[in-house]
Length: 149
Length: 179
Image 1 (cartoon, rainbow over the protein chains, first blue to last red):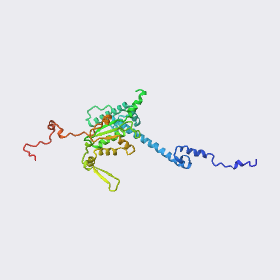
Image 2: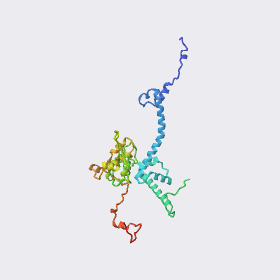
Image 3: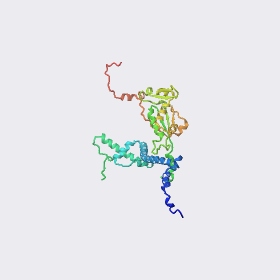
Image 4: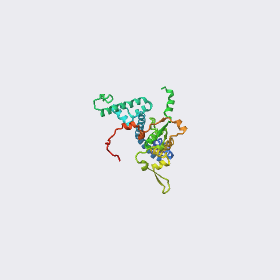
């Protein structure tokens, strides 16, 4: 052959452009319009989508907690008590059940939830007796602080 | 509970029930909060905004509603017809005269969340000015809710013994002349 150095004259600018473009387009395949096909439009849409996803993960934590609280409040009102009283008295008794589990108990384990509400009611009554009473009554059972260390 | 009857439990949990509220001598705002809570389904531990878990609420005796204070004369309901010069302001007494259900309806409408489900929830609310309810609604009622306000007794409802037993703050002397 004559031109033995032909292969040396071919300069490859970047052999992996297709894969770099696909990395972005694969996140845009379910979008509407030309954003799911054309790279220039897809890049902007994918960037916004990632930002929304990050903010959504933070908002999800807030939204879920709000939902748990409203569900627990509905459950406690069924038993004749209110949510802030339940939470403050459970904290005072040292029950460290979080709102997610309380909500699940209120839905699927109604008797356990009822017993937690009764516990909070008893602790509340003891607290009121201690505050309003003369101190001559015997101290309450639920308001006794147990050291666990 | 065995695992193959969970469908019956689920049907019972998500069923839509009918509540009855008697609004005689009650403040319309308190009636409205109770109604709006049950129309949204917020009284259930399975509540979610999108899961359509609200119940039906029937309010009777809306004609005999009792505002506190001077609200019958002072509370103003405003609206605009859309035409120029069409701003209308009506007092609560005038509105109640024209339509005895309107006050409770507007109170509940304002307490529901401002989304597209509000109109659906208002369709599940049934208002009656007096206590004669139609047959088909009477058949559906499941529970009557307790009234939010304790109705005070009139003087004519006290017996003579109770009136005599009531303590007197000041006893007039024998030669005291009442005007």
